[in-house]
Image (cartoon, rainbow, N blue to C red):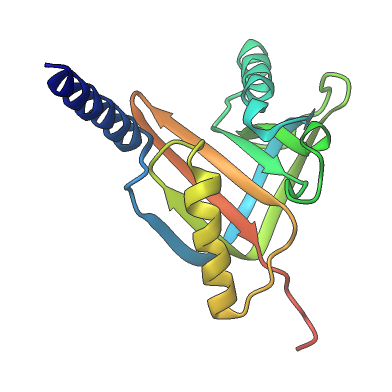
Length: 180
């Protein structure tokens, strides 16, 4: 009787982990391509600390935009520090919204700018952004090495959530040598 209980418990636990993995998108593919990023206007605030805690800063900017009748086309995180080189408490990132045009008269220490990268690697993942560092980043590193591309030290993640469907666009700017 005990071995049936143990077997049932193990199968139930395995089923639970597989269900969670499917929900998070662990088994979904990563689409990788090279492209230019069109001019993209941003409004954001600095976030210092663990990257997995950036969501509250993003929601703060999104809420501010809504209260000020500014359309937040999409949320984003711009990750500036390398977590393998910088202590988690000191990681720096920008958290905010993609907007139609640069914004003036922002809250203290917030910023707005337009970014454009003429050469970048774009990775699209239709799973949870929490899986990205484990699924997307290694694939992009492999792609960059294979193509002999040098990535800049920061990454943009653009988030899209539609009901239960999640999609993240990762933009890895490529270092361009204009004198080659």
